[in-house]
Amino acid sequence: MSTAATAPDTHPQRGFAYRLWSVSDAAAFLGVPAKTLYEWRYKGDGPPSHRVGRYVRYVPDEVRDWVRTQ
Image (cartoon, rainbow, N blue to C red; front, side, top):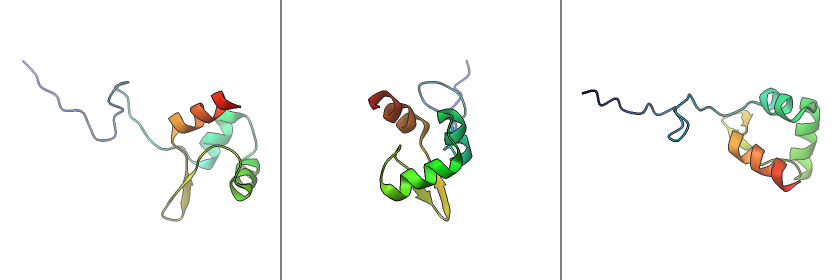
């Protein structure tokens, strides 16, 4: 019997590697230029974003939830 522990970077419900999206990842998902995401962030519009060190990152589920509310 094997008792494999879930890796810390694995989404607990989906079972695949879970990572934050970069600006280019989020832009590709939304089909908009990266510049648009930076403009939305500056204006306070757009999906929730998070600063991780010097980088802007997006939580995929938060971006999907934001799309559903539009």
